[in-house]
Length: 475
Ligand code: ZN
Image (cartoon, rainbow, N blue to C red; front, top):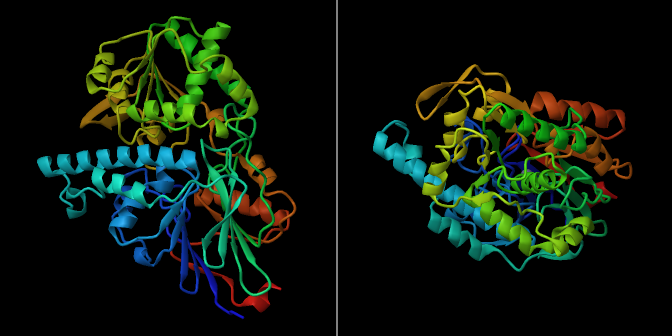
């Protein structure tokens, strides 16, 4: 009969939103859940170069909830530093993670080259990329056969996992980890990022099953979202008003899910007459284009309505839609002064082609920038959303004269009531709150949950939380 302690520690997304990385230790068996990149400003980027706080070589298996960069973006670093276990993920997550990690590696190589050329960042950590394209490709070798939803899969001796649809992005999952310890197993549920119910394309999140502990995201733990139909109307209004006054509509877009959702609503808007039929729409993001192709291959992740639509027609098609893979195609958009809708990444404007479009349009009163996603602290998107009068882009001070729209109903994250609904009433065990801003999402969710009788804890980064001292404690 084993009396090994089971210990949880958070190595990313502790009291912050990005960098998700959770470690479960049960004696010498070590399981990691997610291994994401810190994103936002300089300080967050710097954190990616820091040690993990555990030995990557000691990890047996990595369970990946979904393919967003802040959940998979440090995997190549993990491997570079000694991880040699397996990675378990759904098929769609594996395919998307490949695109996401390659894109991140490309950006990091570019950043490092720029830093070396300019000597601007006199910081040694930045003169080498966090990892290279080769590292990202190599990471794909560690993915085991894809995991299906709702099946118990063996992880390592005495540990199994069940992936349940989290309804957040294509392939996303919450993961229930069961550790066999004597007569009484210990169940720890990792929410991953949870989606909002009722969105198009994906199914709703599967409610939380019984567990002794729930490690839960709290991105929007403090607020409700606007209803989705209102947000779609607002998007159409933003487009109509901007086109009427002769400007461009810039939509900084997350390449996974949001880009496809926005395309889908533009397609519907054109069909319904809310968007002029021949408006040129540019999808200026190689990653979003690849992700859209991957979408088409994973019908197993779609809800019934979307699957039916897909059988009848192409739900992303538009008469004047341009996919811009090449830099030259992207640069050609710079000459368009009015009448275009431009979707480009990154969603938080921390890099990528959207910066060029912001530079060309932010100063123009006739244009508008429509934010349809989360803007983390320290990001350019957050500064613009918070009302900055001018911002610095490519070493140039650009006035913010364009109309700024923030439409939060498109969020791929559950709002406060959706989080509570997901958790349900069945589990009254301890909830560990992660992946949120401490003063906002986390504290608000803590208050809500304590009123409902849950015991809550907000772990600090690297803090060891003992989940079980011995089997006697669990019974
Ligand atoms: Zn996510």
